[in-house]
Length: 292
Length: 292
Image: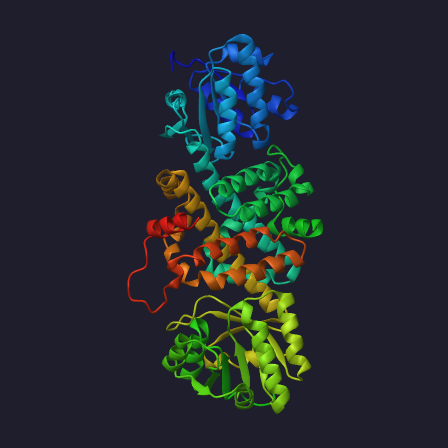
């Protein structure tokens, strides 16, 4: 970085974005966001996280030293395009870090959009849930300008630099989420099938006996549906990542199918702020069986 | 059963089959097999398990009170057809239990072949590894004649009857193996991808930190390749099972792709009797990367 970071732009302050912004703000940085076209919920989360709204993207790129793109995968390219446009219009000196769950080849395309606008680009990814108290996710960074993200380390973010190549930070996220979200999709599928086939109870007993750790993990599945719609695109990005290295895309394409199924149900309409208890695992599975 | 079980036919005494036969023999049953067309290795396993060879399938069906079909999925239907033919020729009173990892709809087809030959059919499945010492797999049974398999309980098999329907025993196996072998395929894929993408070391550190149980499980992956070729058909049967209830077949079709990839490498040529140490996880992944 030419200069120390004072202001960070968050694009956009959704579930993860507002939490990251809140951490940076609590550690003394100015955190801003442009809320053009964002949902009411995102606006409320920005207020809660004390993120300052700026009116336009040109204002965002001029006031921020660093922009963190934290979005659903499908929005990552469009966001970069809007920012690149604002950079071209204003000549602003901002660094752009894409922190989204996207394939290495996708992040390279996004990087090209930013570097063509003449600005430095960082590949980044976030592994783990939003920061809560002392615990926080790891923020992986790679590419020739990864140190620009490393500069956030004194401000409460656990930044780990992986190397010089754009794509490495995205790659680790893809492989990690293949396990966590792939396994969640697999468990959701096999438990739904067991429900239809009338062997749920015997299967639960068998899992308790011979797969107790995986069984315990399954009990947390009802927390997934509220995130299912955004997982669809992430699974598709992992499928693309695997296909690009010559591996089968089908396991992760199937995981996307599962999240699409869950996303079609009312379980996915819930917001994290909803104070009513989550459905039980049995209720969740019954809802999925009805959706088949 | 009309009469007590004295003689059990094993079709065929491969890895699981010979172990099951050994347990039954050790508990006082006569155990027989027809080794027509079986491999040298299966013949050696039969000798080791003290399973008595009979010369023909007509001899097998006439001497056995109960036949257990324990094969790779692709052979299940052909084996039943050969046995049905032998039953028709001889009028033998044998009960036939299909214990294979096959879809409920496949086992119903097999059941029809046996019942058309006028004999009782049991749907069965084996969950867990071959019996060793006191520990053994669970043998699930279902269908109107499931009690014929339950009769083996005093002879060292942990038989659990699930219900009256042909398909239930196969269904629990499909859902269970979706977890265990599906997860193994998923882990193999994401670790291979990480190797190609140059993030293996950082991913291993991240897993050790945030997914220690799954990481520990991954260390056992080098034991899988010797079973990979037979897992292909099993994954395809699970994909069919899920598709038949309206769920996506793609996760398990992708798992079959992964086992096909592993099965193409020299790692799959090894036999369980090979005394040399297994490859390390790194060696296994390097071999898979070379096979892409």
